[in-house]
Image (cartoon, rainbow, N blue to C red):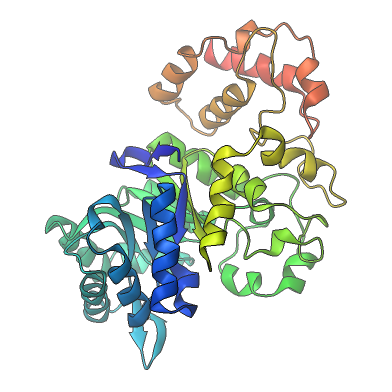
Length: 384
């Protein structure tokens, strides 16, 4: 298992994580079997947003005795009402539900205290200007949460959170299908309707709001853990994929893990075998990870001319890491004043854009038709 730094938190998380949602529909023994298999593979981060006391209890029992090796994302505002999940911004209700999370997980702290599920600008403003953020501050001040996280499906709201100075990391939905969809406040309801997704007007390449979010997080050191990496398994069948083709779990994982600021993908598992299928990413060949060629040849290809940092442009005769140069160029151009960290990273490359000899070999290999030589000229001028 490979591990990545989660932004500026200092935490090192497994790049394949455990999203707990699917565990709700399983017995105590089945939950333990999944978590044991995760443990066997070196997975060390789990997300528990679910408010159902039983699944919280089952997870707590499964990690008892090894709590210290798990990095837990626990959600503030995910509550249990009348026997079902509810979301609340009432601080009394939210605090009680969070105390229950601690009790059921058999712990006295949560590593990543997540502001739960905020997709609307109005909701964001109420959180950040009211008693809810005061509750979060109190929990962090008292050491009950170590870092503050934020959970959202809306790139505009997520970017506001990243720029607010209030959060340390972000839980966000990333996959090839979502990246070409426009920002929306009713994101979850739209995603529940396959027909709506299929009929939605796709952007040409990554939607600008989402691209701006990823670059902002990278620049500010806001680490991202990924939810919905498989798009609820819609990408596994051509009938439900907006591209008209199927991707594999390994390809979906590689897509998310090549994005700026991404540290881990929180995958949902029903069985230990599902864990094995995700962890197969760690030993997969580059051909098995290759999402770019598949997307480029899809009937509905929406990425033409867009660099997705997939690395197909390599090898370069001058040993330029073209994908990294493109990533740093994109990060730098989104800001009025280039952060010194981006410039330093660029200058630390063994070879950079100014070493490009415009041979064009990379352009022949790029599945999306990116004019790489032009990008290298622009990067060289920018960083000169």
